[in-house]
Structures are given as C-alpha cells and as structure tokens.
Image (cartoon, rainbow, N blue to C red):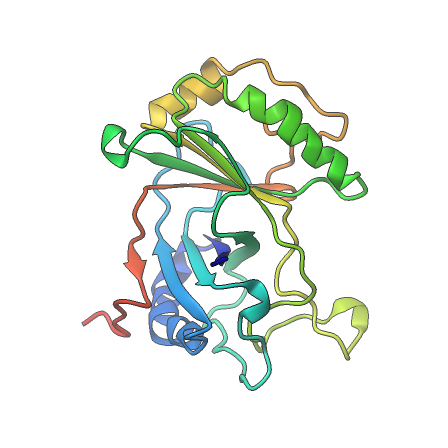
Length: 263
C-alpha cells in the first residue's frame, strides 16, 4: 500500500513568541489537524537538536518539524467541508515550508544493511529545490548521476537516502484565515507553501562527524552550472535550500497520544 507524507519545517523568528506559539500549537493547531483523521493516519512532531558548528545559516530551521502521513495524496482530505484553521496568536514569527514526498525513499543509496542498534543517529534532513529557470529534469539527473556518488564518499556517513517530491496541483491542507491570494486573483487560493523538488537524509553518528564530513574533510564536489552557492549543496540557503538536524525518534505521535493542555 502506498503511503505519502507531508513534511513541514517550522522556524521561529522571535523567541518572545515561543510561549504563545507553543500554547497555540497544543490548544488549537494540533486539534485542527487531527480533524483530518482518518485521512491522515500519522501526525508526528520532531524537535530539532542543536546544529553542529558551521551549519548555522539562513536555511537552518530549528523550531519544529512535523510529519503528516496519509495513504496517498489523492486520497488525503482536501478543503471541501472544512472551516479555516485557528490563526496564529502572533503574526509573522514563523517561517514554514512544506514538502510532499512518498513515505518510502525513491532512492536508497547507502546504509540499508545495518540495524538501529549499531549506530547512534544524527539525521541531517535537507529539502531543496532547483533554481528557478533551470531544467529540473537535468538538475535531478546531476543529483542522481554525479552528486549522490560524491556524497557517498563523505567520511563518517552511515546512511543516505532521498525522496523525489510529489507533483500535484493545489494544497491538500485546509485553508487558514491568513492565506494569500495569487497575483491579485481573488478567485484562486495560492498553495500554502513553496514547491520543493527533493528531500534527502544524510545520517552521521554525532556533530563532530558532520563537521568532519562537510567542512574539514569533504569529498571533492562537482559544482553544477546552475549553482546559486559556492559550497555544497550549491544552493542558496533559505531560497533554494533548507535543513535541520533531528534524532531518530519523534517527540510526539499525536495520533496515538495527544494532550491538549500542559497539565
């Protein structure tokens, strides 16, 4: 049975808003999302862990990563029959980006032959999109034929797989009260988030291993013609490249255990 998941990256822009936003997530937003059951079958929360030294940039998301799992994106509940979600209590304090991917990786490059007990796991989760105006199929061939092979030469890399994003029209999410309309067209709601082309995971045992593999002793990477940055992954942070660092287990599985209040 095919499963898809929607991965949502959240970044908090103002620490003063954390208490209000945490209350909103628990009391309003999570219950709003749970309304989509049984269409959505898993709703997971990960808390990013501190990034390794040198990983901090505009594309680093450090607040929350959510995963919403469904059997297939075409079967996910849409907006019909739903009312708007409860708006955030503080405006313009969160950056959020969504990527829709198959639950199973579309490519599994490295590390599928060991068990969880063999390594501690630091997951480097990367969402990226190829620059506007490029031939996206050619960019993806470069990733598969050139860059993936170079990534596998990183010292200390223990696991590497990737998901090609799902292409679809419109958003499967219920609308919020703050949705923006496209180009002044009052008859058409924009997708809630930008389109991303891929999500990849690179696993290391610890922060020092990441620093060694990416900054101190990286393999020789081929810079593509369409690069928007001079360093791997050759994409401009925040515009074409966002990332975070997670552990292997979610902090909450809301479909199984959800408490609306802290007490």
